[in-house]
Length: 183
Image (cartoon, rainbow, N blue to C red; front, side, top):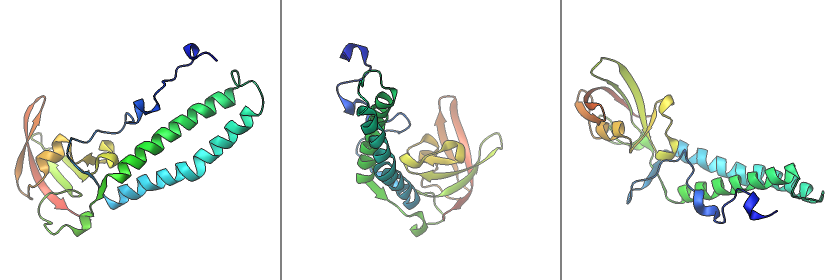
């Protein structure tokens, strides 16, 4: 099929950084908890050993059926292979630069550092609980925030009972730290 009718780029590395991945600030390390590292490694292993071989098998079967230009299994399979390969490249790069930090080994347990679970209240009196994790582990809706997020940056190095200042687009907000825990 003519390239004019296919929506593919010539450079597959154009979209190595997937939309859900947050970019690391220049010169910083990719900190991760041991659980986060294992989860990414398990995903990479699953893609390599299970998903990719099964898609390759489908593509191979579909290619043997003849005309590839109108073969849905072949076209979808090739697209899925590109997605899997892109994700595998991304995971490999992230795992290569990962620095695993075990929060359970934190000696200063009264101060907020990477891996801490912090309970704080805002000026409206609402209590929030967040765990400071790596960029690739962040799930804000589950209370896991990236260590480079504005809230985490405001909380880091503070202690129980401290009031920290959080600069937001809506203005300055004060957060009262109620509790600091480590696993």
